[in-house]
Image (tube, rainbow, N blue to C red; front, side, top):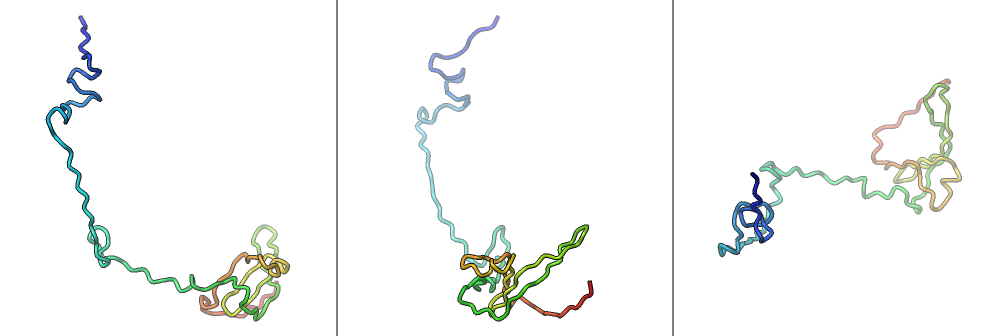
Length: 136
């Protein structure tokens, strides 16, 4: 024979709600103590006892690649090879300034005040330049 052993206080058979086995803290006169500790780790230490690896600053982030006041030294059309089954060349417009090389989709795109290049990279990032002549 089965008997219903529920209590009238809305709890379980152990006398507390939520399925806990321990009695309520208020009944035992216990109070919760919280402590907050601020821990400052010196800049020489990383996580897990490993030394902190200092990443050198990126010098290229300080260069404004699309500065409209930067004078254009050279500009002209460039034919970019697009690989594929029929291997075609795409015309692009390139501007060389004192700070950067800018690569545009076309010449009118470079003339617009809000025209942003498809790609721009700083001159100081170039390691070498070679002239290539090919018969295609």
